Every structure is written in C-alpha cells, then in structure tokens.
Length: 277
Figure 1: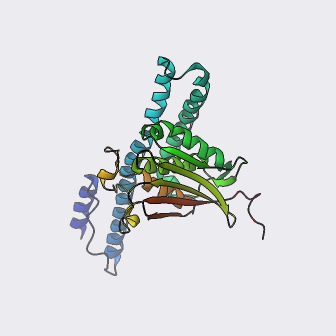
Figure 2: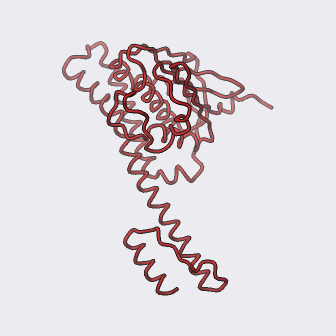
Figure 3: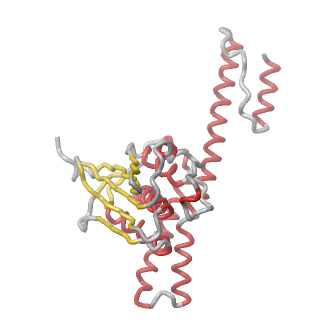
C-alpha cells in the first residue's frame, strides 16, 4: 500500500487526479490513510474542473459585449452615429465597460460564487432589462428583428446580484436572437406573479425538439448549427444562466411549441415589495 501511495502522489504531481487507492475499505490505519488519499484526489480533481470551467466561462463572457461596444465607438469616431445620438451610445459604452469590469472581478473567484452565499442587493430589474436590451441592439438590428418590450415604467425592485442578473438577461436575449427567424419579433417582458418577478424572453423560429430541452443548459451543449447564424459559439451562455440562477436559488423554465420558444425565470421581490404574511 505504501508503494501504491508513492506512485499516486507522483501521478497527482503530474496532474493525473484519476488515481485512487484500493485499500480504503481496510479497517486499519492504512485504510484510513488510503481513504484520505482518495478524498484528496477528489478535491484536487474538483479544483482542476473548476479551473477549466473558469477559463471557459471567462472567455465566453468577455466575448459578446466587446464587438458591440467597439462598434459603437467606431460609429462615433467615423461619424456613422450622428452627433445628437453620441451621448446615448457613449453611456452604453460606459455602462458596459463598468459592468464588464465588475463581472470580471467576480468571475476571478468563480469558485466562491458557486460555493458560498452571495451578497444580494436590491436593484431595479426594469433598468437591468433595458440595459441588456440596449447592449443587444446591434445584433438585433443585424437580424432585422422587431422588439416587443413589455417592461413596466415604474421600477420593480428585486433581490440579487445586479450584474449577474443583467448577464442572465443578456445571454437569454443573445440566444433568442441567434435562433430567431430573420424579420420576426423578439419579446422581452416582465410580470409580477404570486409575489415574484418573472422575466420572459421569447423568439420565433424552429421548435426545439422536446428531447433537446433538458440538454440546453448543459455546459458546451450546442444545438443544431443549421438553426443558428452563430458558428463560433461554444455552448456556455445558457450554462452560465443556469449557474447564476442556481446561486440565486431561482428557477428557469423553457417551452417551445409551434415555432415559439420562451425562456422564463423568476426572481424574489425586494422585501419592501414582497407580500407580507
């Protein structure tokens, strides 16, 4: 057993965390030591998994906002965006830059986000939805989509991490835009039902097969590329949506019938707005 443990430590040092001790069931000190080695290997394997997941996630999350932000900047510099609209797009660039900066800081410790209770805050969900929609403006325009935005004028205050929930909405809008039929209508709406905020994103396109719906939120899962204009996606957007909502202890549902696909997720209202018992 000792020689086996020596070989195992060499394997771990080389990055192979699949090796396990075979004597963990013994009822003596050697068995306890072998069980300890196996627990250590499990922990190292999980750390390595989270490291790889972090690299994939950060690469994916930095990619989408940058082209639109750069596009708005170029539009201002080359005069494509008229002077009277410059302030609007400069504000979008500023908001997106600040949001990305905050998002990167949080994702640098994504393992903590996944394992610890997050520090929630009260924020206006309507404003987050508008920001996500504005950030998607160029992609929506490129797909020649109409937008139906059912967002209340008055603030709807919810509990959560504002930047992460904004990212959820952005990812859902981006996914809906990719798979929407050109020239169709993209819907983004907010309703308060049974004391909870419900955000819905709906597009018109091909119906998602029932057997594929449970797979949509798996990491690196990619739907049939023929249904999407995006050939370079790596299948992380919806996985990140699920991860963020799980950390908020919230739920997301998907329906797809007759060419209409809807993603709807819930959020807790701020304490001042939640129904009192």
